[in-house]
Length: 445
Image (cartoon, rainbow, N blue to C red):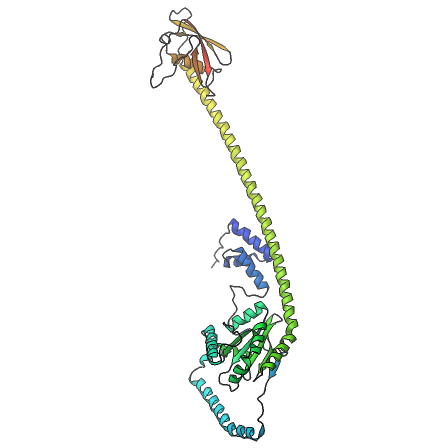
């Protein structure tokens, strides 16, 4: 079956297609057209999306999958710091440790067996993340209820959002996984995480994201970071264009030690962050330069289009003027031809000139506006219209005129009017046997 033909592009769409290809450097015209169609022919949005793809940012029409989380955890250069539990001291400490050891071993063994068996009965509900933001907000509320509001500022969003913000802002991201059942969690939160020294350090130098592993969002992050024990902290940053875990702190760590370890990790990776900032600044400058070039190109294109528009308008105006002049010439020719035909018709309809010795004849000398004289005889019984038609049939007579007597000066009513539909005869007009009449030009009036 033949493929359906593509719809033809309009002139505006063709110009946008060529402009988009010039701005992006794409050789495939089909790819340029698909991209513009995806953006509803919005060239600015299409160009920006294309530039984002070149810089590693996914297209809005190909969003990145939400799972698995794209964090590099396999780097062998990751700094790891594990704090072991202190050994018992003295006879009393060892006695308490040995007495509690069987009970502790039995409790955790039974708990692990119970959780393992429970997985066969029903799947772990933490495996399905339905409301990641709700998981984080719920953990923050429960944390504040138990430990108070004096704590580092929690990032109130999903883990993926925290990663994106840290990447966009080129900041460190400190991730804390809260193990509610672990024996060191409570002491760590009260005596380390909520101390003024630690919260001030974290708030001024990095983003801080935390969640409980008993909630789906925290459990998902736990599966991605693969912690060994609790409390667990992971330092993440943009390294080699990927969000990478650069430090792992596990176990019950003291406030001063925590600040020292975080400072060491930051100093050890500062060069990578500076390199990323310089590279991003260079990309931004390149993008600004490209944007300025694009703006200059668009301004030049708009100026050329404006020139072309004015040129077309001037051409159209000249064409209209030429057409109007041609029509005027044609109208003048038609008017003259109609006038000549009317003169011929009037000349053919004139009654014959009476004889010289006819006692009823009137000799009239007409003085025309060009100072020429015309002489003709008429009958007293004829209407003044005959005089007018005679003069109208002459080539020397203007198109519009009136006939005037000299003494006394009066205009002869040669044409019918509403008050006098039948003009008077020569006799009724009071003309004598020999008259001199003047033809007055009314064309300008």
